[in-house]
Structure formats: C-alpha cells, structure tokens
Length: 201
Length: 201
DNA sequence: GACATATGTTGTCGCTGTCAACATGTGTCG
DNA sequence: CGACACATGTTGACAGCGACAACATATGTC
Image 1 (cartoon, rainbow over the protein chains, first blue to last red):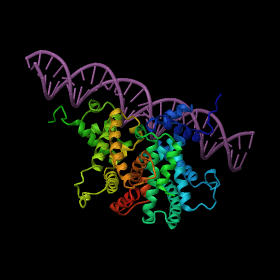
Image 2 (image 1 turned 90 degrees about the vertical axis):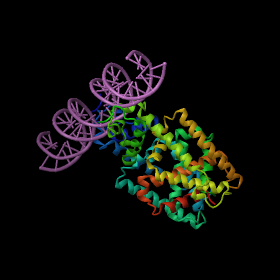
Image 3 (image 1 turned 120 degrees about the vertical axis):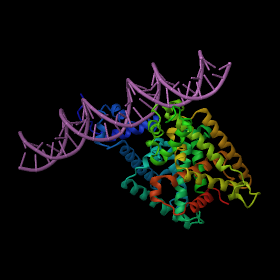
Image 4 (image 1 turned 135 degrees about the horizontal axis):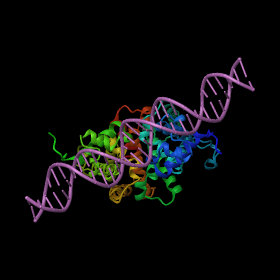
C-alpha cells in the first residue's frame, strides 16, 4: 500500500517534467499529465509550484546553475589535464566546448533555458543567477582580452557575442528543422570546430 | 451591418496572431482569442488553418521567406551604396547585420522561427524553404572562404557557425532575461560590433 | 436558376491551469 | 502522551482551450 504522502514529489515532478519535455517538447508538458504519471492527484503539483510557469522557472534556474557548474568546473577534469598553466583563452575555448556539449546532452533543459515564454516571467532570483553567471564569464573574458583575445571590441559587446554565439550554435545543433537540413556526422568534431571559431586558439 | 464573410480572414488571423505574440508571447496566443478579436466565431480559423500548429508553421514559413529576402536583398540598398564591387566577405558582414536588425525589429516573428515547439512539426515545404535559405548562404560562405574568410574550417561547419552565431546573438538581444542583465544602449552600434565579430572585415 | 464549393456558426468533447474546500499525515510543544 | 499547527495530498468545480461534427450562408460556375 502506498503512503498518503509521496515523500519526494517536488523533485519527482521536476524530473518527470524534464523527461516529458525531452520526449514531447514544452507543448506536450502539462501539470496534470506528470501528476498522473507519478500517481498523485491533479492538484498535488500546486503544493510545490504555484503555477506551470513557476515549475518551468525552477527548471530554468536549476539548469542555469548546472550549466554554470559545468562550464566553470575545476581544471582538474580530464579535458584540461595537460597543463595547469592554461591561460584564459584556452580556458574560454574549453568553456565554449563544454557549454555546447552540455546543450546537446541536455536538450530538454536547454530548450527550457532559451524559451522566451519561460524567461519572460523571470523573477528576481532568476535574474540574480543570470547576473552571477554573466559576472563570472565577464571576468574570464576580460582576462582573455588582456592576452589579445578579440581586443578590438568593447567588453560588454564581447560578453553578448560569447553568450550569443555559444547559445546559437547549440540551438542550431539541437533544433529539429535546422538539423534536418544540416546534420553533422560527428558531434565531438563539430563541437571542437565551432568552439574554435568562437574562441580561436 | 457586417457581411457574413470576413473577406480576408486568413491574412487577418496571421497579422493578429503576430500582434498577440508580440504583446503576450506564444503562450498568450490562442485561436479562440484571435477569432474573438476579429469578430468571428471560435471555429472560423479552422477553415484556414487545420490546427494551431499549422498557423504557426505558416508564420514560420512566411518569416523565413521575409528574412531570406531581407538578408539577400539587392545591393542597390543604401547600406551597400558605396561599392558595387563589394566582395563576398563585405556582403556577408552586411548580411549578418541585416539578420540581427531584422530579428530585433520583428521579435514576434523571430521568436516563432526559433521556437522548438513550432519547428518540431516542420513539414516538407518548410524543410524545402530552409534548404533554399541554407543553399544560398552556403554559396556566399564558400565564395568568402576563397577570399580567406575562416579558411581553416570545413564549409559545413562554417554554415553551422554562421547561422548559429547570428541566431544566438539575435536571441540574446531579444531575450527578456538576458537583456535585463545586459542591456545595450545603442542598438545599431551593438549590431555593427557583433556582426564584425562574426564576419571580421 | 441550380448546384457545388468556400467560408462562417453553433454545439460539444476532453484536456488544461487554477482555485476553494476538505482530508490526512508530520512534527512540535504543552 | 496528546493536542494542535502545518505541510502535503484529494476532490470538485470553473472557465479557456484545440479539435471536431453538423449546420448555415455566401460565392462562383454551369
């Protein structure tokens, strides 16, 4: 017999929502559907998310956090094994690769992050998270500029370019319409090529 | 007294849909709402679009067509006034600028174009349009590569980069969350700066 | 003028998000 | 230990939605 309380409904709802989005897109997601999937009543999600928009905002926030950690992960990972003295430009190149790879491997989360209907209702906490992310990247970009990386452009414009280029390239690689026309054969190869265009070594 | 037939309902529905999306986003769009706005019954749109998805697919197709014409417009426009012998690289730079400017000035259409829930159901006609667009851009890119533009990358990867970078940069400039953190002061200035990063002169 | 077709209307269905009212479990303090 | 506050889940209701079927009216063609 099942207990009256689920025990971990909030996390379960988030996980299930991401799974549904992965399979059927944002349009295919409904609170009632994931509630039924988890065996709870249709109004149970309301105890954890005050609206569907709120659930998506939480997923966006979590995803942004996860992406931030992925991009700025410690240099001890395998990819940056060789050289502890990697300069800012090399690090930026690795960051670009990690971000694109993360988007490809987390299509659902990425699609939530870039969906205007989600970010449209961004609350203060979300904006703060975005500021943190931008701030960290900004520091790295300025360090790289000191080493000659894209010196000719203002630092603010460079931040826009870096975020935009990685985001757009990831979007093209995960978009159904575009990839039905331009299907790359080898993901890791194209990730490297594209990252090298964004952050030339 | 109003006539029984609207006379131009199909176009009116498209225009109204774009206006609603501009104001309230894709989430705020419903067939019943725009039908009511236009003073017709809730089922009238079904005579012109077999589903909501179909309406959005039409808007996507129209927008792609409009963007294509905007980007590949005749060289006789003011922007390219000076030099009829502009080479492929200069033309690409202008094209990048036009695409970003178009996205900023047509936020609703752009948001439909990049929405995965719309392109997910792309039909053959749409894929064909995308192939045309990609083909034209591909030719231009190869001509530019012959002149030394980003020679080191494969032409297919370059096409991905070009589309991705312009798309992403435009998305960042039109996204609510991002632009609440990074608000550029002068649109035309930032467009030029970003285009120059994507297609250096 | 008759008839086919295009276009718009009305009614209905199941699904959705949201809310209110209620039920049950959990933890805390006497 | 027991009473009570609170967190969490249920049931029922409502309006809005996309979609479909049946019907009504306008338009064009012979």
